[in-house]
Amino acid sequence: MTELETAVHAAHEAGKLLRANFNEVKDVDEALAHDLKLALDKESQDLITDIILGQFPGHAIYGEEGLAGDQSSEHQWIVDPIDGTVNFFYGIPHFCISIAKRVNEELVLGVIYDPMVNELWTVEKGGQTLLNGNPVSVSPRTTLEESILFVGCGKDADALSKGLDRFRKGSLRARKMRMMGSAALGMAYIATGRLDAYVEARISLWDIAAGQLMIESTGGKVTLTPHENNPDVYSIVATNGKIPIEEIL
Image (cartoon, rainbow, N blue to C red; front, side, top):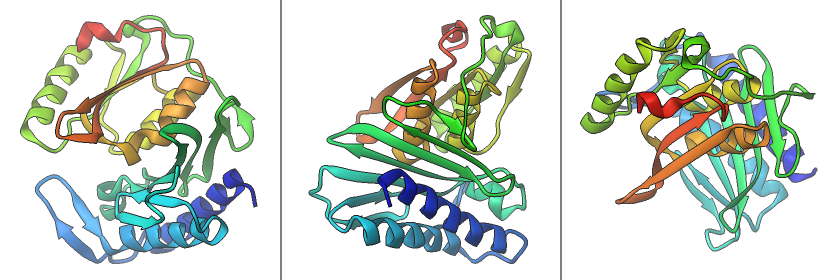
């Protein structure tokens, strides 16, 4: 299998696992103030890891649930095995599997799979973003007044404060605001023209890597600002490239 075929296969297999357990009682490994860690997070990542490293044993896995493979490799797979874990735990069918790959820090492919509605987004560097095999693009909207904005509030006090302030500002301008619980799906929705922007003060690489390439490949814009103490945690502003998002930042 090619690298993209491998990522798609891994996402589909993880999706089967999550669908099969969606209505079951979930084992909680860690309960935090604004987040959860489930046994299924690790089980999903292990499944994805086995598939990818089975095809490419010399590559590296960098995932929300840990590292695997050869961490000195220039080929790094970035995995979020359940983006939207809290939604998943509470029985809200809005979550996904996100898999990206970068070579020497450059993103080269991305896969986002929503197993509950069977929507699969794929992209390779230099190519089109596809949804279930069909090309998609960002929306043509140019004003905040006609836009739908997705604002994330993060998990620490500073990120929460910034997120709530942006939500307030956006609510006064935008057609609608959303807090959806899955950064990866939010970015896939921007690439598809369903949403117009996503902003958050603190988000991890595995949440946004695949979506970044998808948005940029469909004419949108993604601005990432690394946090000082963690180069793989960012503040993010992702848009269709047309609306004046700076007016609510």
